[in-house]
Image (tube, rainbow, N blue to C red; front, top):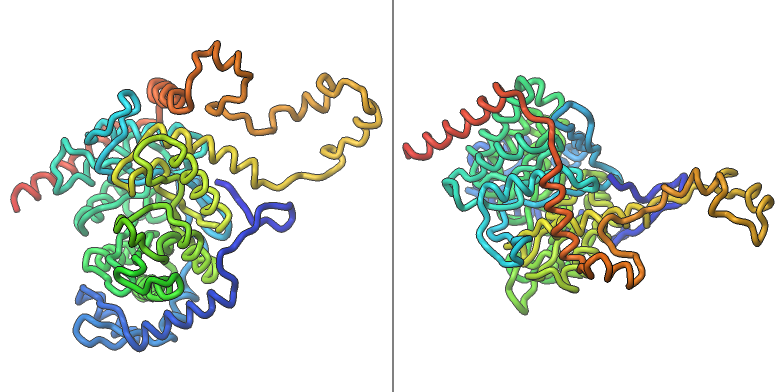
Length: 482
């Protein structure tokens, strides 16, 4: 976790939108909800919303402003996730930022060959292991879409792998509602019971919603199911400015925000107090030059996160990604900037570290490089402690202008405190050359191989492994019978 916006100790402060702009977007979203409405593609969800005060005309549901105000009062300000061992791992709220990978890349940039290929389940296992090993990575996602399992239920296989290879919190994605149910069932088997998992959840579902003004059935069903169980969720409608919403950032964000607010209202109607995280990316103009859903665009940076801060809600952000296809200058530029902006804006659960090519490709080398960037950012943005020990006036008086500070006890006490990268080369040219003249890409390959060879996680008990595998087998039998 990296924390910014501190008040007692100087730290980084930044915001894309001011209170006045946020208020205007909020009021516009309320008007959209009340006058225009959102298409809600699930009958049960429509009934719950109508019972809460909304009006429905077919699929179209319109919400009065008081429903939003009531929901925002009960929605928690912090989303807490535990690790598999029962310890608090993430308090996602305020300006606490946590980082993790992403899910379901269709391709992998092989860190041995440097070539793009289709991933398999072993790649999912390796990526999960790597994320578990990297110290600056706080949570795990599946990274790749494996081609060597049944594509209709690939997410069940991913979930089994993640539960077996990490103790860190998990953010999972499922293409259908049944997959969400199966994933929660696996988590409950690991926790020991539904009650135990609800008390200390170590996984949460990233709910993909079609758009701000279109709430698809699967997303709504997941929202209601998780709310009924009292489990945290990430409810994420996304807009593409100029495609399914106005091209201007304000108009795109206002219509996207309307859908976000509808999801919060629905969750709070089902179970007041259930935690809901909101989006921290998109909400700006689409790239109409390429018509590609790029992951790092300048205009949208920080806009939805500013709205999340306005509501004081947990924000599910994006960073450590690039639209480059190879590990080049563009990848370093975009990964660094997206990590930095997500941190400074205050996104809480920042995913997609290691994503490339508009999310179509993932790289374990990129994960390792981003781990080092995050270490640098942690040092860059942390407050500077100023007291008698750190000012060291007695040391300055003792040694004066020409004394040997290097051998002093004060230096011995503090020399390990600065950030020293394990991947970035800071040596003289001669030392770099003597060590093989390796590029960062080559050093990242070695780091990945070393971690995969050495890292061991706490295994699940054998009976629990069998229980979650039985759920996967049941799901395979179910899908085969359809």
